[in-house]
Length: 185
Image (cartoon, rainbow, N blue to C red; front, side, top):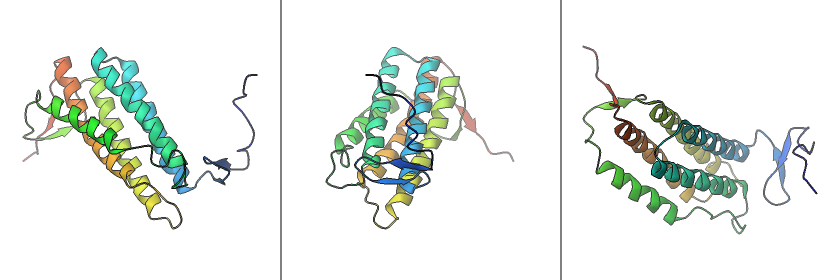
């Protein structure tokens, strides 16, 4: 039996969370994991643009992690199966690759404008969406009776750093200079 994509269960502006709970679609939790989903889609756009195979594999890992993060945010039960799905291991993996990429990059002496290659520009867009996702999760944390595993904020904070360095690294691999911001006098 094939499942239909449309269920009509959301036609009145409500949707389900993991578990039996239904909430309005403008609920802060829905907004937070919706932004994570948007970020995942933009990372998919970067991959479709084409990057080196080893970098593509790294972006695939990010997409898988973001799917896990979305599940964690959709699980409002601290004892639920997905609530703690993002772990310190996810963060350590990002940090290790940041360190590896930075070892090949020139140290920053200026601010960087989003730009360079098309893939790098899209990674900068992903970084800004990641920052928005982080803000949305922090906002969710401030809503009474809306538990969130604090490690999700740490993960998103580190992921935005990762995407920034990744954008620079993609430019390096493409032989394209970063777009430096040099203040006008």
